[in-house]
Image 1 (cartoon, one colour):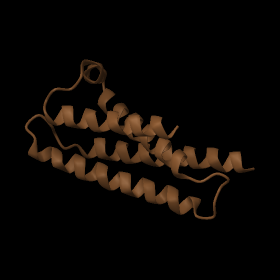
Image 2 (tube, helix red, strand yellow):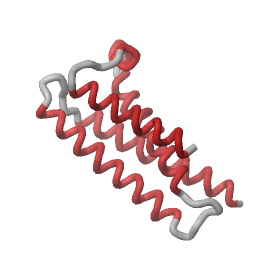
Image 3 (cartoon, one colour):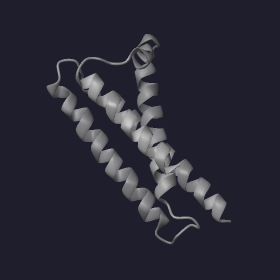
Image 4 (cartoon, rainbow, N blue to C red):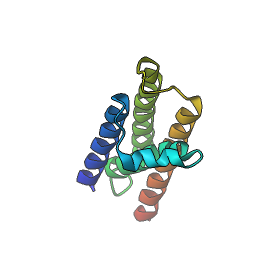
Length: 124
């Protein structure tokens, strides 16, 4: 699972870099063909990323600091997402969008919550 989380993180970073360069892969560009498809993409991409990272880093059996670990991962990811979204103002191929940012944050919250609840259920 650790390797899958690392691989997915690498995928997310590659998507961001390709979007900054104006060279979004066709399978990602296809999301823009649907109304609000890019919004769904933000939610899914960052929700999945936080799910994987939180699931991997929360110790099992559930440690007393598990909530702190989950919150820390989510906040670090949210900070990175915020910086990336605001940086889009400096790329001609990108556009800052508060709704994208909101859905990214919502994905982070939901993904982290699901991972925490799964770990909690496994502990009992």
